[in-house]
Every structure is written in C-alpha cells, then in structure tokens.
Image 1 (tube, rainbow, N blue to C red):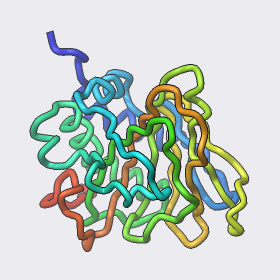
Image 2 (image 1 turned 135 degrees about the vertical axis):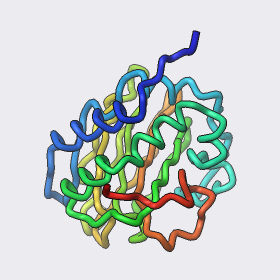
Image 3 (image 1 turned 60 degrees about the horizontal axis):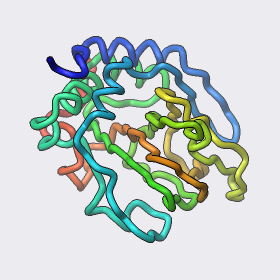
Length: 225
C-alpha cells in the first residue's frame, strides 16, 4: 500500500488557496502574512517521509550559500523520482494558486518560475539577519517542525536597525510570507535544536533567475489561466 496516500495536485492547490485567502496580514516591522493549515496533512507527511537525510554542513558563516552544494531543491530530477515532490510542485504551479498569490500579495506573478527548497536544520544551524534578493517575487516558509520545542524554531524578525523585534511561530503546517525588500530583515538566531528543524521555502522567482537547476519546472513559467 502506498504511504502516505497523497492528495491530487488540485486538492493541494485548493487547500493552499484557502489558507492564503484566510491569511492574517501584519504591517510591522514590514508587511508580512501569517498562514495556518497551509497544506493537506497527507501532503506534509509525504514530504517528511522522503528518503532525504539532513545534510551534514558543519560550521557555517550564517548563510545558506556557505553550503550550496548540499542544499535540497524539489527540482526536475527529484520531481521525476519522488511522488511527494511531484504532487507539491504540480499543486503550487496551478493557475488558481498563481492568481490567489497575485491578488493577496499584490504582485505580478505571470511568467515567473516556481522554486522550492527543502530545509532540514540540525543543532548548530543559524542564519544571520538578511534581506532576500529582489529576484524572488515572494518568500514563504512553511514550517514542518515536530517535537516538544519545535514551535520555538520560527524565523526571527528584525527592524530596520537589525534589532530582533519578533519571532514567527513554527507551529506545524503554518507559514509566513513576505515580499523581499530593503527592510525585510529576517534570520534564525542560534538556539538548541533537538531533532530536525524541517521547513519548505517556496518562491516564485523572476524569469532571469540564473540557477535553473533549482527550479521545479525550468521550462514551464507560471501561468494565470
């Protein structure tokens, strides 16, 4: 028997669109959206069941670029090999998702490309305060963290002076979205991680994105209809 029994891509899309339309928008210290119940539970279980071990990255400089060769993307090769990667990709590629994202976030997404990174942080992981590059039309983190301390593994939020002013909850199957800009400082301050801090970073990226091997469908831009 297949485990888990994965939803169909339209069901993933519909579930996500409902979460997006119910998102809570906050304006401080920069505009961002908080979502709950983002993906069907079976979709989350499918991702967590993937035979992909957390990478051993050792000491880093607080950037993911310091271990680029070990990062995991749901790209064409993984979509062809793993059903959960394919279902999630096909779901988030659908026009109704693109339209809802454009309407909710106030951005033009037609012609962009889907990029999905699977992150598995272990004890010692941290990210310095940074702003995402403008080639990302939006940045979303979906938290798939489990364990007694997992809710405290959310993203740290900073003001324009890079003072930490908040921390998103990493409650299971919740998410935070923001539009990259000059003041969208965020990171992950060092703290104990007992287990694995699992999350998905989802972006629509501009057509000129250079690292095509990171894209879910490098030959299929996002369409609105």
